[in-house]
Image 1 (cartoon, rainbow over the protein chains, first blue to last red):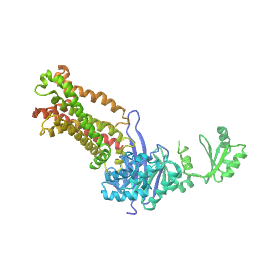
Image 2 (cartoon, rainbow over the protein chains, first blue to last red; image 1 turned 90 degrees about the vertical axis):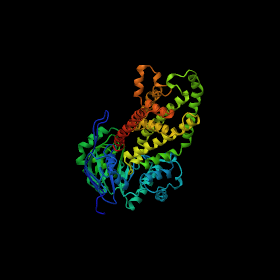
Image 3 (tube, rainbow over the protein chains, first blue to last red; image 1 turned 90 degrees about the horizontal axis):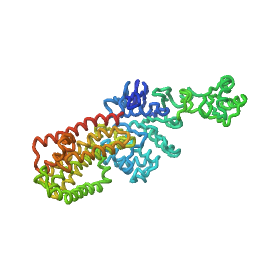
Image 4 (tube, chains in turn orange, brown; image 1 turned 135 degrees about the vertical axis):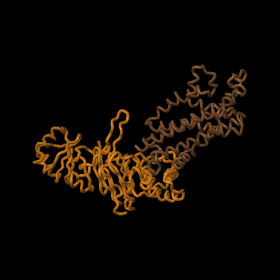
Length: 319
Length: 253
């Protein structure tokens, strides 16, 4: 089993038929990817890039419009139920029953999988520990915080001991502390050998969690690789971020002399700031000063996946 | 299908006491009020159409059918639309081995359970008033269940497609409630002006009320029962057939 690819997509396409006033929508436009056992694989991209549609197709809850998709060696169109029995899904909206208790939510979900009550009881105890919700077991979901609910949703998705766990935007809407707690839980799962597939529009999350990722934009894959590889290939080592009082004039001045003076740096002008990609941020900043420009703020930082996305599409990940 | 049914059953455990009280109290109050007030008035000059029985015995099975319709619609429409919403319970079930048809089937089973239990309470009250015979009670109950499902299944097929629940209220107000008045629930359709009668025959509740009434009073004929039950069964089956499609479209977009 080790060499079998867990998920294999060829020319995968999703087209939503026209509905009401909205026209036909091509959400995923012929993408290829392959997933190996035990890795953490990410789909990075802005809202509307086609990440969630791809996830729904992988979880066999949305029919494929074109191309092929095999999950655990089975076709999602013909073996949906058998695939769903062996994967775990953490949807973006938790879809917990807020009127039921934490324990009841786990119980009912286990029953959906046809697990026996004794098995569910045993796993519930383990999962409550894993999700650090033991004290809350008999509380109604209504009273839980957002972070606790998300951890419960993850615990719930593990009730069938899935081989693949799909997480759609797992930390969107959580505060930093809750995010780190969640990341820690996901690392544990990975160490236990669970294959993770996640979507995110947070570059730090993708860098932290993913072994490999694809960058999506407009339904297509625009880049793929390990986070460090992608940064090395599509961004410079350092990045200089500048803010100006009169950005348009400053950007024009920089453009005129960019390639010669900014140590080979490349410019990206965003709505609120100018980003300079340079091997050495400090000397690029010196060049900016030498050009007679005085930025309001200047920040030199390491390049991230955000910069990869910016370089590839000319747009920021979070609009 | 049983798995989805057991979800709704677990949900119901929180509120069942309240609903039992309501399912008993409602018919009790209705039959008391109508029997003592309106019934008294009608029975002094009984119209030909209900000759031979008290107004209460005539009215009760019609009301039973109408109540089954209302339970069927209310247990279906709003709850289905909520469950199919972004954070609804269908969403959680969809990520498990259950398919859309099983989710639909399980929920319909629960609706049938609710219609059957509330109708059973109604029939028990009718027995208490001596309005029907003990040995007829089971078939009257079956008639009420069929009436409820004739509304629950099409309502589910429609509600699962809704993004907002506002329209459900309009349908309740402008379709379900008027149906009470023109389906021979409170009076025989024969009392209506001649030109209005054919319209009544088109209303599904007319068939539900007639089915329950004839079974309850022991005046059922084979043909009549077959027609009334056939119309209701056709509606329920058509509802299920459409729901198979609409559930799949909504839950597996």
